[in-house]
Length: 243
Image (cartoon, rainbow, N blue to C red; front, top):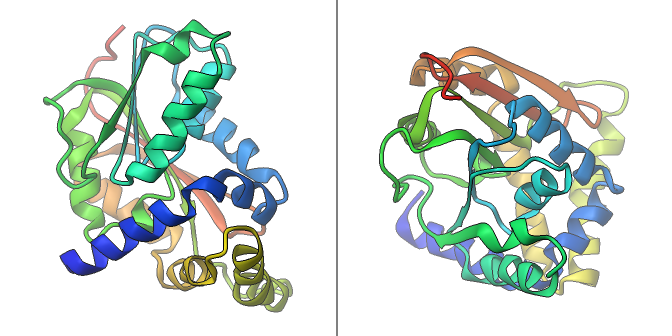
């Protein structure tokens, strides 16, 4: 991916940020929150951990962790889209009931050059990141670098669906319905045409698992959802768990 393409994707996310949360709910029939809960569960996140959410977008993974009652000692959300981060910051300002929300560090940055020291976090999560980066290996390498020994990376993303009786219906939904909804709700049909294109061209669950293993992660596994169109991968960094 060229720098120009990267800037185009950033501009796209900035434009759709005001309706991003609503569109996710509509596109997934409300299943997006369940997948975030699963991401948090499979990440092994627990009290007193430090969490980095890469490509945090509007902050929904972080908010899910807090709403699940996990008391974290450091919470950081990183994204390259100022529009998305503005929505996340607005959500924290508008909710004064939970003091944990005030402790979130929202940082604009590059997933391929994370602005953190080595071994900084117990858990690193991402949702819909890997499909949008120019170098998946580099993205996982950076996450491995900032992860503490014994820590875990967990990744939620779309995955190409194996051919089945449901394939024609899923393809119709991806190619026709999602762009229509995107145009209607966000006013940006091209952004939601980009989604099915990148989904079809993305790595299979097995290929993504192999990249994680090559990067150095141990105990790498994955689980599929939504007729095999969504996958969560997770893997550990070798070493004693940091309690």
